[in-house]
Length: 134
Image (cartoon, rainbow, N blue to C red; front, top):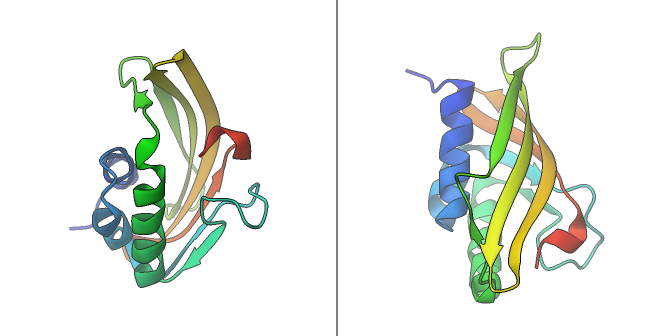
Protein backbone atom coordinates (compact mmCIF):
# COMPACT_ATOMS: atom_id res chain seq x y z
CA UNK A 1 0.00 0.00 0.00
CA UNK A 2 1.47 3.38 -1.00
CA UNK A 3 2.39 5.89 1.68
CA UNK A 4 0.28 8.99 2.16
CA UNK A 5 1.91 12.35 1.43
CA UNK A 6 2.11 12.93 5.19
CA UNK A 7 3.86 9.58 5.72
CA UNK A 8 6.28 10.24 2.85
CA UNK A 9 7.16 13.62 4.31
CA UNK A 10 7.57 12.27 7.85
CA UNK A 11 9.90 9.51 6.63
CA UNK A 12 11.89 12.05 4.63
CA UNK A 13 12.28 14.27 7.71
CA UNK A 14 13.24 11.35 9.94
CA UNK A 15 15.91 10.16 7.48
CA UNK A 16 17.35 13.69 7.37
CA UNK A 17 17.27 14.22 11.12
CA UNK A 18 18.99 10.90 11.74
CA UNK A 19 21.43 11.50 8.87
CA UNK A 20 20.45 8.18 7.31
CA UNK A 21 21.40 8.65 3.66
CA UNK A 22 20.36 5.11 2.72
CA UNK A 23 16.85 5.55 4.17
CA UNK A 24 16.56 8.96 2.52
CA UNK A 25 17.62 7.60 -0.89
CA UNK A 26 15.15 4.70 -0.66
CA UNK A 27 12.28 7.22 -0.59
CA UNK A 28 13.18 8.23 -4.16
CA UNK A 29 12.40 6.51 -7.44
CA UNK A 30 15.40 4.88 -9.12
CA UNK A 31 15.72 7.99 -11.33
CA UNK A 32 14.57 10.46 -8.65
CA UNK A 33 16.04 13.95 -8.48
CA UNK A 34 16.75 16.11 -5.42
CA UNK A 35 17.38 19.76 -6.30
CA UNK A 36 18.28 22.79 -4.21
CA UNK A 37 17.89 25.57 -6.81
CA UNK A 38 18.90 28.46 -4.54
CA UNK A 39 22.35 27.08 -3.78
CA UNK A 40 25.31 28.43 -5.73
CA UNK A 41 27.54 26.01 -7.60
CA UNK A 42 30.30 24.62 -5.40
CA UNK A 43 28.33 24.80 -2.15
CA UNK A 44 29.04 22.00 0.35
CA UNK A 45 25.43 20.81 0.11
CA UNK A 46 24.83 19.18 -3.28
CA UNK A 47 22.85 21.40 -5.64
CA UNK A 48 21.43 18.59 -7.78
CA UNK A 49 21.47 14.84 -7.31
CA UNK A 50 19.99 12.58 -9.98
CA UNK A 51 19.25 8.93 -9.28
CA UNK A 52 18.82 7.03 -6.05
CA UNK A 53 22.47 5.93 -5.92
CA UNK A 54 23.80 9.45 -6.45
CA UNK A 55 21.48 10.74 -3.73
CA UNK A 56 22.76 8.04 -1.37
CA UNK A 57 26.44 8.77 -2.17
CA UNK A 58 26.16 12.56 -2.10
CA UNK A 59 24.13 12.69 1.11
CA UNK A 60 26.44 10.20 2.85
CA UNK A 61 29.40 12.43 1.95
CA UNK A 62 27.53 15.57 3.03
CA UNK A 63 26.51 14.06 6.37
CA UNK A 64 30.13 13.06 7.02
CA UNK A 65 31.41 16.57 6.15
CA UNK A 66 28.77 18.30 8.27
CA UNK A 67 29.18 16.04 11.31
CA UNK A 68 30.73 19.00 13.16
CA UNK A 69 27.43 20.92 12.97
CA UNK A 70 26.55 20.90 16.65
CA UNK A 71 23.04 22.27 16.20
CA UNK A 72 20.13 19.94 16.87
CA UNK A 73 16.58 20.28 15.61
CA UNK A 74 14.20 21.37 18.34
CA UNK A 75 11.19 19.24 17.44
CA UNK A 76 8.90 21.05 19.91
CA UNK A 77 9.48 24.43 18.27
CA UNK A 78 9.70 23.25 14.65
CA UNK A 79 6.51 23.69 12.62
CA UNK A 80 5.35 22.71 9.17
CA UNK A 81 2.24 22.89 7.01
CA UNK A 82 1.69 20.32 4.28
CA UNK A 83 -0.37 21.61 1.36
CA UNK A 84 -2.20 19.25 -0.96
CA UNK A 85 -2.51 20.28 -4.60
CA UNK A 86 -4.96 19.45 -7.39
CA UNK A 87 -2.49 16.72 -8.43
CA UNK A 88 -2.48 13.96 -5.77
CA UNK A 89 1.16 13.20 -6.60
CA UNK A 90 2.33 16.74 -5.80
CA UNK A 91 2.47 18.36 -2.38
CA UNK A 92 4.17 21.42 -0.93
CA UNK A 93 5.53 21.83 2.57
CA UNK A 94 6.21 25.12 4.37
CA UNK A 95 8.71 24.56 7.18
CA UNK A 96 10.01 26.63 10.06
CA UNK A 97 12.84 24.58 11.56
CA UNK A 98 14.09 25.51 15.02
CA UNK A 99 17.62 24.63 16.12
CA UNK A 100 19.34 24.56 19.48
CA UNK A 101 23.10 24.93 19.65
CA UNK A 102 26.03 26.39 21.56
CA UNK A 103 25.27 29.84 20.12
CA UNK A 104 21.65 29.59 21.29
CA UNK A 105 18.44 29.18 19.38
CA UNK A 106 18.27 29.71 15.62
CA UNK A 107 15.90 28.88 12.82
CA UNK A 108 15.49 28.32 9.12
CA UNK A 109 12.40 28.73 6.97
CA UNK A 110 12.08 26.77 3.76
CA UNK A 111 9.68 25.39 1.18
CA UNK A 112 9.84 21.95 -0.37
CA UNK A 113 7.92 20.75 -3.42
CA UNK A 114 7.48 16.99 -3.74
CA UNK A 115 6.45 15.22 -6.95
CA UNK A 116 5.72 11.50 -6.50
CA UNK A 117 5.55 8.59 -8.90
CA UNK A 118 4.31 5.17 -7.84
CA UNK A 119 4.53 6.18 -4.17
CA UNK A 120 8.18 7.32 -4.34
CA UNK A 121 9.71 10.79 -4.69
CA UNK A 122 10.44 11.44 -8.37
CA UNK A 123 11.43 15.09 -7.83
CA UNK A 124 12.05 17.12 -4.71
CA UNK A 125 12.86 20.81 -4.97
CA UNK A 126 14.16 22.16 -1.68
CA UNK A 127 14.20 25.96 -1.37
CA UNK A 128 16.22 27.32 1.55
CA UNK A 129 18.75 30.08 2.21
CA UNK A 130 22.23 28.85 1.26
CA UNK A 131 23.90 30.50 4.24
CA UNK A 132 21.81 28.40 6.64
CA UNK A 133 23.47 25.12 5.62
CA UNK A 134 27.09 24.26 6.36
